[in-house]
Every structure is written in C-alpha cells, then in structure tokens.
Length: 269
Ligand code: HEC
Ligand code: HEC
Ligand code: HEC
Ligand code: HEC
Ligand code: HEC
Image 1 (cartoon, rainbow, N blue to C red):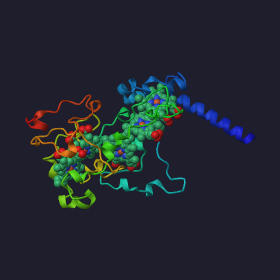
Image 2: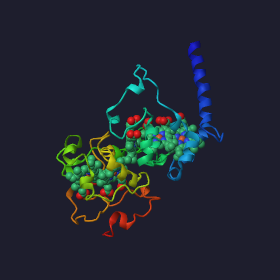
Image 3: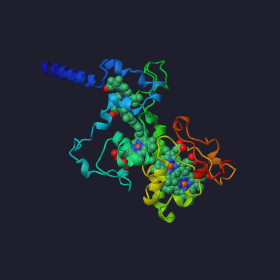
Image 4: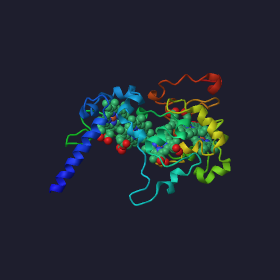
C-alpha cells in the first residue's frame, strides 16, 4: 500500500514538472492544453514555430537504442525502409517526415498539414449514449492525408499489367517513360517540392515509387485530383468521373501560380 502511494506521488511530481515545461509562457498546464491554437480556426493559421514553442519534443526525442526485447535499432530494417531513398539511422515518425535529409529534399510538411484539431467541447466520439459519432480525438490525424503518400500503386488505370515490384523492370523502372506525357501537371502544392521531386526521379528509380506504392500502408490508393495536362483527351475515363481538377484548397495556399511555359506549355484549356 505504502509503496503504491509513493509511486503515485513520484508520478504526480514528475507529471507536473513535465506539464509545466510544455508551456513556455507559464500560463499553466490546462491553459496550454486548451490553448485555442489546438482547434479550428486558429490551428489552420498556426506556424510550426508556434507549435514547437510547446512541443519541441516531437523533433528532439529520439528512438530507443534497443527495443525492450533487446533488438538493436541499428540492426533492424523494416520492409518500408528498404527503398533506395531511405537513408541514415532509425528515426522517429516526426523526424522522418519533417527533418530527415530526404524529407527536406522533397517535402515541406507543416504541423497543420496533418494536425487539424477538433471540437474542443468533446474529445471523443460516442462518449455517451447520445454522443456525436463524428467527433475525433485531438491527437487524431486525418488518414486521407497519409493515403496521399502511402497508398497502393494503381496500375489498373495505368496500362501497367500488375504491381510495380513485378512489372517495373519492363518499363525500365522508370515512371517518367509514361509520365513525361500523362498527368505531367503534378505536385504544385504547399507541402511538396515539385521541382526537386522531378530532379530526384531522374537519378533514383524509387524517386516516384516511394510515395506511390513503395510504402503503401493501404491497399487502396488516393483519388488524386486530375489537373489538366497538355495533350489531355477531352473524354474523361469512367474511373476518373467526379474527380476534382485541382488539389484541395488548403494545399494551394501560398503556391505560386504555375508558369504556363513550364508546366502547361501555353495549352491550358
Ligand atoms: C501553449 C503551449 C502549446 C502550444 C502553442 C501548442 N500545444 Fe499542443 N499541447 C499542449 C499541451 C500542454 C498538451 C497536453 C499534453 C498532454 O496532455 O500530454 C497538448 C496536446 C497536444 C496534442 C495531443 C497530444 C496527446 O498526447 O494527446 C497534439 C497532437 C498537439 N498538442 C499538437 C499541437 C499542434 C499541432 C500545435 C500547433 C498548431 C500545438 N499543439 C500548439 C501545449 C501546447
Ligand atoms: C505527416 C503528418 C504529421 C506531421 C507533419 C506532424 N504530425 Fe504530429 N502526429 C502525427 C501522427 C500520425 C501522430 C500520432 C497520432 C496518434 O498517436 O493518434 C502525431 C502525434 C503528435 C503529438 C502527440 C505526441 C506524440 O508524439 O505522439 C504531438 C504533440 C504532435 N504530433 C505535434 C506535432 C507538431 C508540433 C508538428 C509540427 C512540428 C507535427 N506534429 C507534425 C502526424 C503528423
Ligand atoms: C507528403 C508525403 C507524405 C505524407 C502526407 C505522409 N508521409 Fe509518411 N513518409 C513519407 C516519406 C517520403 C517517408 C520516407 C522518409 C524517409 O525515407 O526518410 C515516409 C515514412 C513513413 C513511415 C516510416 C518511418 C520510418 O521510420 O521509416 C511511416 C510509419 C509513415 N511514413 C507514416 C505516415 C502516416 C501515418 C502519415 C499520415 C499521418 C504519413 N506518413 C503521411 C511521405 C509522407
Ligand atoms: C505504361 C505507362 C505508365 C507507367 C510506366 C506509369 N504510369 Fe502512372 N499513369 C499512367 C496513366 C495512363 C495514368 C492515367 C492517366 C489519366 O488520368 O487519364 C496514370 C496515372 C497515375 C497516377 C494518378 C492516379 C490517380 O488515381 O489519379 C499516379 C499517381 C501515377 N500514375 C504514378 C505513377 C508512378 C509513381 C509510376 C512509376 C512507379 C507510374 N505512374 C508509372 C501511365 C503510366
Ligand atoms: C514526397 C512524395 C511524392 C513523391 C516523391 C512523388 N509524388 Fe506524386 N504525388 C504526391 C502527392 C501528395 C500527390 C497529390 C498532390 C495533389 O493534391 O495535387 C501526388 C500526385 C501525383 C499525380 C497526380 C497529379 C494530378 O494532379 O493529376 C501523379 C501523376 C504523380 N503524383 C506522379 C508522380 C511521379 C511521376 C513522381 C516522380 C517524378 C512522383 N509522383 C513523386 C506525392 C509524391
């Protein structure tokens, strides 16, 4: 009994110290936790620096050197870490998406690309019998966002006979063989570095596959918007009926208008 309460005390003391450090302005743990920046509309405008004022740990904390079972991190490699673009030591999820060499080369994800907050009145869906089923946890991240880069390779619509791992070689492991002609108007969004991606794809065979099938957590693939490209046929194929013709509005904020000569070659319909 005594031992249990001592443990509780230690946890409480550690817990408070920890919480205070999460609020540089000293307004207290609860004020920080319920800071309006976590919720819409403020979260949509928030900068990474504002979030990192309190959450620096997401970029600073590192993975364990070994798992509790003793497996050393530097001797482990998961299937999704075998692509040619994967480099360096094991890293945390946030570091892999925000600060690794590869991430900074091809992406510029922000905290609010993934974190969009929720209704501050209630964290959890169906928390009581009449509860709202659409509410999400604050931690919740829209899985559609992940699907954009971690969906399956949709060979069915590409005139590629099967999965890229099996049939890529027949196309010289080169997506650009076709994608110099089809769907050339791509990646003009505020969380990707479009030009760097094109350059990388010319020298690394996994440069495109990495975000379009090579790390698929899902069997489905994202229904990408179908930005018009030069030479595009007017008829819309059945599978593409109802697709948007440009990216989600929040991903276009701050994106410079595409130079006609560069991307659309003066052909814009
Ligand atoms: C004033 C300090 C402060 C700011 C600024 C801040 N947070 Fe928080 N945040 C907190 C605190 C404190 C918690 C509660 C942590 C807990 O309960 O473990 C929290 C919780 C969270 C959680 C849920 C974590 C969990 O374990 O449930 C997420 C996700 C989060 N914040 C993301 C963000 C993002 C994204 C931003 C920027 C838009 C941001 N925060 C800005 C202090 C802050
Ligand atoms: C690629 C999408 C993505 C980006 C970008 C991102 N996060 Fe997260 N974040 C997640 C996911 C997924 C989780 C885990 C959610 C869960 O466990 O339910 C998470 C969890 C968190 C948590 C909870 C503590 C933890 O480590 O699990 C905090 C705090 C947080 N993120 C803050 C941030 C901040 C601050 C930024 C910007 C510097 C950021 N995130 C950028 C997807 C992202
Ligand atoms: C804009 C594209 C993009 C988005 C959006 C994205 N990822 Fe990733 N993700 C990547 C890339 C690229 C890598 C590989 C990074 C590397 O090799 O350094 C990666 C790696 C990963 C890894 C492996 C990390 C490791 O240590 O090897 C996991 C797990 C992951 N992503 C999950 C998610 C989840 C969950 C989401 C949604 C919250 C998400 N990703 C959103 C592009 C993205
Ligand atoms: C044999 C030619 C060919 C090859 C090789 C090819 N694609 Fe495609 N791809 C297409 C065609 C055709 C479409 C559909 C064009 C349209 O929208 O009408 C397409 C569509 C796509 C789409 C959009 C899917 C959607 O649902 O909107 C993505 C993403 C894509 N390809 C990525 C790739 C990547 C990455 C590779 C290499 C790993 C690749 N493609 C290799 C021909 C090809
Ligand atoms: C870092 C991740 C990443 C890499 C690398 C990447 N893509 Fe994408 N791709 C995306 C995302 C995210 C989208 C959706 C963007 C949007 O909303 O318009 C996309 C969209 C597309 C589309 C649909 C464009 C449209 O509007 O019709 C095609 C085609 C495509 N990618 C092909 C490629 C090819 C070819 C390469 C290599 C040159 C490549 N991708 C490399 C993440 C990536």
